[in-house]
Image (cartoon, rainbow, N blue to C red; front, side):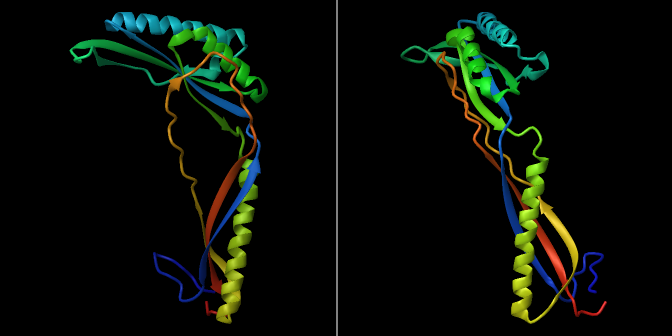
Length: 215
């Protein structure tokens, strides 16, 4: 059997990459909310934005959202120019909130009620559907990736007139991340949430030695 150690490469064998995917239904909705207020000074902007955020928070409490499912999101203040000549200034205060909802069926109604309670200062950053436990789908995706890699290796071995030996090493690749949502104004109505399906992906790089290579 060919050995690989101390960064050296085996004398023979084949290295292939396989990818696989498995569908699963999301069971959690992550909602990014914020209140955004413009005022003449920082104190007024923060006060009004905080009042709107408290109203939004009460609506979440009334809907039965657990306190542990709510956390502070992006929070900031800045100034912007006003007037036709841009010679005036006003302060913008944005207070963010990230809410994790574990009932997909009622998530739209909960978000709609929160938006209505927050009034014109509320913003909806986006809804993100996630799978709380993707391990089962990941296992299926890995199996599919392995089957693809093995099929490629067998074909290459046949083309080379060789027989596959044992696996020398396996490397799993990590999935990439997504883009951050943009904030936008939101009307006060129940937000449609359809879970659909999400695809969990896996990728493996596998090296086989040739069966007839000397150890």
